[in-house]
Image (cartoon, rainbow, N blue to C red; front, side):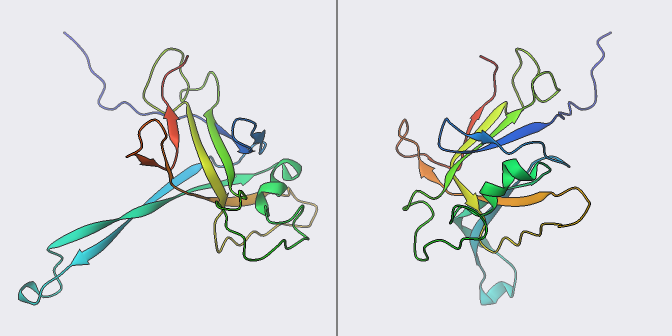
Length: 180
């Protein structure tokens, strides 16, 4: 008799690094994991015949954010304010995040040897790389200046880009799902 499990859950930690594409620098340890939030945008269609009932919708794109809380202040503080050389310097107003090359690469990697990165299997992304990521607009970062752990909460906006290998494909990030 064959026995099959009811579910196939996946868990495991990820690390985060931020900086120039393929030269990202670790943001240090994070607490409570890394969350990816994907939001779809649609223009809903209603008609008087059916009142406020939505009868269809026009897909209008979407947005992706990555949320994490870094616990190594010195490694993560640079990502908190990319517009000046440190958070005390405002930087030049009017620059574009992507067009002025302020947005940088965010690399998320499954920690080796954890269930998120089992040797020789596929499924959960082993790495996720977003070449255009930056602190999200409206991000309110509070830093505790006390005799407590100084964490850096970060919310990154991932900007879409066109994949050179498939010019009709617009992506927020690339996934690697198998170990090399």
